[in-house]
Image (cartoon, helix red, strand yellow):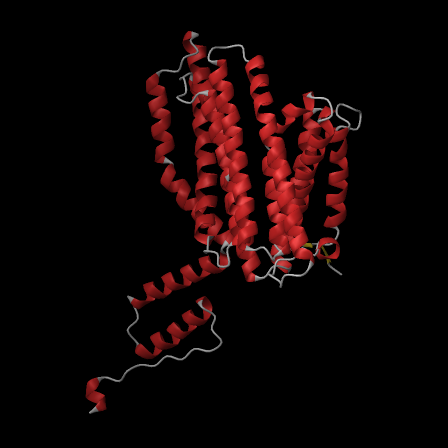
Length: 412
C-alpha cells in the first residue's frame, strides 16, 4: 500500500473542493508567513552590524549593506513564489505544502540573515525551530513531489531518519550528535548519499508511478535544478580555478560572484513553482536535451582547456622557471578547444539521443533511411508498402491506411 502525505495532512496533487478545514489552514499559513517575514525583517539590522564588524577592508558599510539587500531580495523571490503557488491553487494540498516549503526554506533557512538573531537571549529557539522546519519541509518535498505520495513507500522512513539526524544541528549545536562537527568528507558523503536516494526515488516514481502530467512536472524541476547546479559549479569552482591557472585577473569581484550564485539558485524554486502552479506545462524535452548536450560539452571542453593550460604551465616552468603562461600558448589552447567543439557536440548529441531518447533516435534513423531509399526506388507499390512500415515504426498508430489519387488519364 502506498503511503501518502494524505494519511497525515491530506496533501494531494489534484485540486479538490474546499472543505471546512481549508479556511483554517489558509489562516494558519498566512499567520505563519507573517511571523517568518517578521523574523527576517527583525534580523536585518543585526545582520548588517555583524557584517560591518567582521569586515576588515574598505567600504565595509557599503559591502555589508549590499549583502543584506541581496539576502532580502532572494528571500522576497522565494516569498513571492510561495504566494503565487498558494494563490493559483488554494484548494490543492500539495500546492499548500509547496508554498510552505518555499516560505520556510527560502525565507527562514536558506538566507543567513535570521541567524543574526541567535546572538540575542531567547531567540535561538524560535530561529532554530524556523530553520529546522525549512530543512524538514524541503526533505519531505523532494520525496513526495509531485503528487504527495511517498514512492516507493520505504522512502518515508528514509526521510524520517534524515530529519531526525538534523535535529542536533539546530537545537544542540556543536554537540557530539551535531553532524556539522563531523569531518567535511563525512558530511559530503552523507549529503551525497541522501541525494542519490532522492534521485533513485524520483526515477522510480517517474518510471512506474507518474502520470504524463506528473512527468512533465518532474521534467520542469529537473530543468531548473540542473541549470542552477551547472551555473553554481561554474561560478563557485570553475571560474576561480580558471583565474588561478591562467594567472589572468578575472573581471568578477567577490560580491558579484556571490550575487550570481544566489541568483542562479533561484532557478530551482522558480521551476518548482511553475511545475505546481501551472495547469498546462510547456514541453521541455528539447530544452532538457540541449541542456544535457551543452552541459556535458561545456564541462568536457572546460576540463580539456584547464588540462591544456596546466600542461603548458608545467612546460613553461620546466623550461625557463616562469609561472606565467605566454599569451600565444593561451591562444593556441583556446583554438584547439574551439576546433573540438563541433565534433564533440555531434558525438554527445548522438550518444544522448541513443541513451535517453531512444524512440526519437530510432524514428529519426528510420525516416532518414527511407528518405535515402526514395532516391533509388521508383516502384510505387514497393514505396507504398515501405511508407506504411515507416509510419508504423515511427508514429506507431493503431492502424494506418494510405490513399493514393489515381492519375487523371485513368479516371477518364
